[in-house]
Image (cartoon, rainbow, N blue to C red):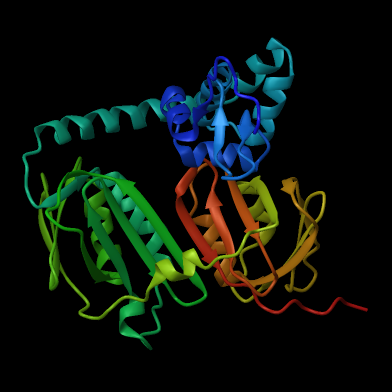
Length: 358
């Protein structure tokens, strides 16, 4: 039996997350990136434990990330002198000003939540809902071959709203926090086109109240009311896909802007990704040179290929300055996560790699 500490000040990941005012998803992301490791990991249970002396470092990192600082700059700031910090943070003044605008919007939404009365509904910011629709809806199948795949699954419980869409090559999942009361969890499938047409109106509302029923989705807001018809078919069991994903031996974190530029803009392109010390992107577009994107890589080298129309939308729909690719075998879906936002995840299906040119 191992020795017992006289004064055990370890905190579970949940307790530590509350102490540092971050999400457990953010802490797992920092661990995956090698930015902040747990003080201890139980060899038997795998539980992560943190110590109180790590709180200040995580709070600082959270502040820097909320200012939009990429992971590479965070590393340089933590390792460098004060002059480096001043230079890096001064360069992000405009981003910080945008954060103030977000804070104002959140304060307005909070006031609406406080005034909200009990009822069988959920309420959230119109801006947040419009953003979630914009991230998820592009993954729906617009060919019409399978009607339900042309829709977005909307699941509501007390405290959470989840949006899901898939075209069988991509699976996009976004969860957002909500206020309001649901007597029972409820789900409805609404056409992606219907949601996209309503999105500009939704984004203009300070808050939107959602009433879900089998036959429709009703949206109540200060600017009026919208009712969207439901697709009366069963949505695929997406949770089974997520639960069956194997361990991903290679994780790549790259600046989202640079990765998007490397992917190009030709929807006909096939994209070959080679992961080593960095991330190299080769496009099938003639005369387009390979582009190397600086990246933080954990795990072994791997090569994987995608159609542009599968990978580019998954990266573009993310939030924040960075994106994480979790890569298993080349024939299994790649998990695309937005850095610091573990509540938005896309599964992108690769294609068979191309043969190298002679």
